[in-house]
Image 1 (cartoon, each protein chain N blue to C red):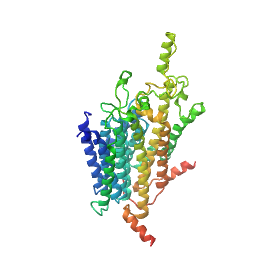
Image 2: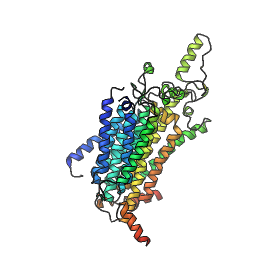
Image 3: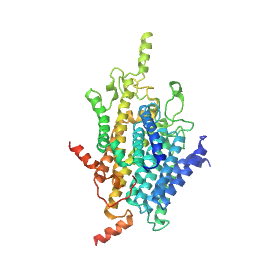
Image 4: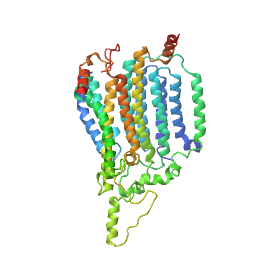
Length: 156
Length: 123
Length: 222
């Protein structure tokens, strides 16, 4: 599909809007429908669309494999970290009031925002990982040396 | 007639579940089984969401402070099912990964063929 | 009865037709596409059921990512299905038996859309929808602060209605989306481990599939 100008143009023009929409979903998760799950999936869908048209190697150049693997863990750490932070401040686990002890009612949306970002990052990372692994090796052109470089990235 | 109007949603959800159940039992292709599992899952989601619906209710998003008297559908099943969908796609991905590995090991993803091969190997 | 009943019935009929077609069609690519259509119809149906968050998720996950994953898997596993018999009668019989039992079970359920169903009249449910669960003993919300100021002006003690959860509402009116507030506040532990499940699925994919280079399966999605 790389040589199809219509596909290239459509994808190039659609991806920014998808990313903006995902950001809207993420930041308005507590105001309207949406949240971390949906925004993570929409961001992943934008990059997957890019990968489908321009090839997996090109997609992994934009979003390297080690990066998405890392994000999957980082999101869970942010989520659990919000809970551990509350414990360290003397509150109960995942008690968002720890973020703003003077105004616990106002702290609750902040805690939700932090937690939603954690969920969104994890979902994005894992969806990209799943797509990378499911489609790995399906195209001879994709046998790029990214695997080796990914290994060295882990090692270094 | 009234009984149909009262329960048609539950019956539809049971019908969807049974479509998925039939697919799981009757289809020997493993990818078909995964699709059937997804359909079975959505049947259960329909059941939960139906229990949360209130006549004349609206989506569980508070519009303004003044609208606190509005009737909202029960948000608890929505929250449960939202996570269920995302976990469902994760388990589906793992299932597909295992199917890809099965295909590499046996050269087929047909359950009965795999059973035959295992049987021949055992003798 | 809900005025959207016709829409419900039409959407449910379409969903069931799409589901049967996805199971019964011979070509696996067609089955994946029909499953995608099924998910989109399901998203429409959930909008009529007032589950906007679920509809959103289904449209993004069910119709988007699942379809891509199934297509990617089909490229690696082949797209032909061996059909040994058109109708598997024992399976159909078992399905009908289980379905009949379940339909018999629904007759004890509260009526669809009944606002007096036990799930809607439980005391905790009122707290969910009003976001008034009083999670933190001794906590104060913005509303409480205003009320405290008013009480100070009138120099009379603030009236607290004591509940089993303590007193002082925490985030009354702060989060309009009740589903989000349930997911990441009331049920935060649950969501933490759901996130862990997703993470584990990603790790499982890496363990199962990463590094199978030089495999004989060629031709591809990408």
